[in-house]
Image (cartoon, rainbow, N blue to C red; front, side):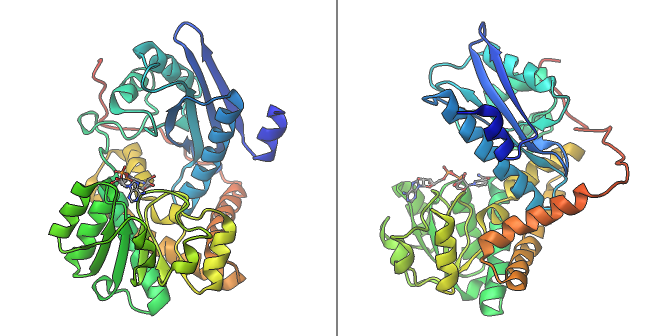
Amino acid sequence: MNIFETVHDTEHEQVVFCHNKDAGLKAIIAIHNTVLGPALGGLRMWPYETEGEALNDVLRLSRGMTYKAAVAGLNLGGGKSVIIGDPAKDKSEALFRSFGRFMESLHGRYITAEDVGIDVNDMEYVFYETDNVVGVHQVHGGSGDPSPFTAFGTLQGIRASLQKAFGNEEVGQYSYAVQGLGHVGYELVKLLRSEGARVFVTDINQNAIDACVELGCEAVGLDEIYDVDADVYSPCALGATVNEETIPRFKFKVVCGAANNQLATTECGNELEKRSILYAPDYAVNAGGLMNVSIEFEGYNRERANRMMRTIYYNVGKIFKIADRDGIPTWKAADRMAEERIEAIGKLKLPTLGRTHRFPGRERSNQ
Ligand code: NAD
């Protein structure tokens, strides 16, 4: 792999390789774009088979964060970091503190949060060394579990999609097929049921299904979910469930859910368009978690978080308008919306005021 060429091709601003032999740290921090603000994105720990695989992952994920923050209307750029290692075996205080020191050397250009393989205790060690961590525990002035906000944001995306597809956004008048009843899916089902909607559900976990059946949902099999005669398909489990095999089975009119990377390929997004199935781009719909942590910059406030989630309705609506304006599928319109915002703000020649009061009310447990 030609590292410099790869970084150039993916338009990254900076890629930092962090190595500390004593602590066993091998990490990569990728800062994709900071035109809108500091690069925010989670820290992932994964036993990558090769260093090239880790680099590809961090480059891909950080670029995704740029688009997500831009479409969400946040003053944030995109970044991500990965630690090469097995989360079950290779964790230590020294590992995460050495990572925190590398982060601190970036002076806030990159802000991290929990991602796959990382838990709240690991983040605590990173937080010992740098302020630039979000999603910390509520006892430290953090925002806690983002899932209820992500679910509420997803509901706003559903409302915008219903408005576009049916000219009516009364959630209770439509039926839903929800796949995955975990942190986000279960909260979403509660919201849908509280509006009186008919909801079909599936999960690999029987307890999760039972909890939803108690709310009045109808359980269907894992594979049966794709054949359900419902208005909206809401993937809230895995990626790539909208694929060549499932699309021909869809009777749905709308695809709108919280799962990341729902389209197996962009061609699948084009196929939905051809079949007049409205796709609400996943990264615009599920931005609630990112919005929620972004509020930590100004001092976390739940009410503000709830208000912010409502903007997802307008963001998703704007994507649909761009798709109509330019005659393109909605997945492409979302990317275009992000690029247009970054370009417009990037052209501003006025000085910024800068942020001097980051993270008010934060305390560290080691102080
Ligand atoms: P979770 O792990 O709590 O829930 C996932 C659920 O999906 C679990 O109940 C699991 O049993 C179920 N599941 C797994 N495989 C399945 C299958 N084959 N069929 C049906 N169900 C299956 O995760 P979560 O936090 O609820 O996140 C759900 C999705 O939303 C993920 O794709 C995640 O990346 C995305 N997301 C979550 C947030 C957040 O705030 N939690 C934010 C943005 C995006």
